[in-house]
Length: 384
Image (tube, rainbow, N blue to C red; front, top):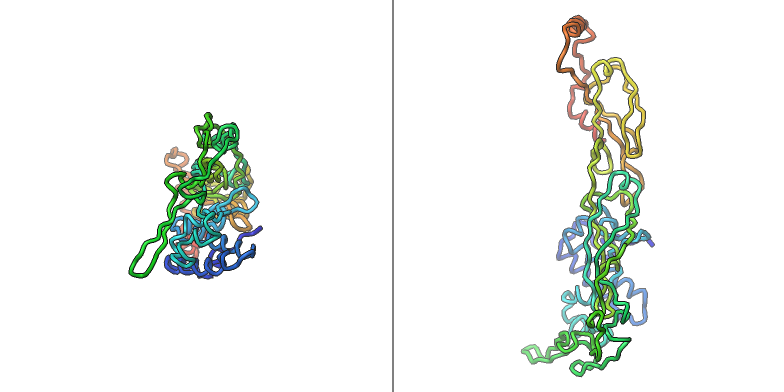
């Protein structure tokens, strides 16, 4: 399923300020809040969608990557294994509840679904890994398998933290709610505040006998090999997110994400400029004057090109589609072959005599065309 544009979701333009983004999100979230739309799954989906859009656009770094690379830049590649979305209600409550103030009576989390929604959800921390890619990996996409040391669900207690499936008692302090409430009198009237239960830590229950293998945490540290399907066209410094592949959450909680930082290895011959590749080709003076057929490197091997007679230094040959694909669109960049004429630094007496005779010929006198004189046009030829 193709994700909608985040600016479209919040109904704002791309020049929106931080305050505009916050105001737009609050409007959308109140509009689609499940308490106002009971049993309406479409509204709940839009509620989560708005939260995901706000989570990206309210963060300057994530917004910059999104503006440049689209959903791929923030790890929202539908079908590719990477996901920066999939936010649960509990994620939204914990991250963005302060935006709503008293819009739903007594705080955002307590305003949705009663007390059970206030129960703490243990979320595992994110993992961060670096993956090195060469230009061929970037050109075609690649599957990498990486070994990580992470927290996984304890197999002895199935992540519950209780010995042999164990038993639990309801927390007497919060009566299973995971939160305790306090009502205080202010000059504005009574105000209710909620906080995590100090007795059960927000679980709402107490384990009577802890698992001896994980000491009641529900997670243990192990090595795991994780396959990563990295899409074509990624760039150095780009971050992708693999949903649910981070550390497991304690006592049956949800797993964090794996953040993958792309590191691009330098190619020995090709220089990347966005989706274009640049190759500096050096030819001799005689090859430039007489013309020659040569091979130049590309990502997928060498190709043969023709240097026309009379080619001038600084001329750029464009090989269409021989660059890199766009990570968030169709088409590929080009290979730009920049011609450099190599002038010999040492000459024999015989070579000097020959060149001195040639220099007297009118054909060897500089006679550039108007376009060759115009340096700005040459630059335009290079990048257009």
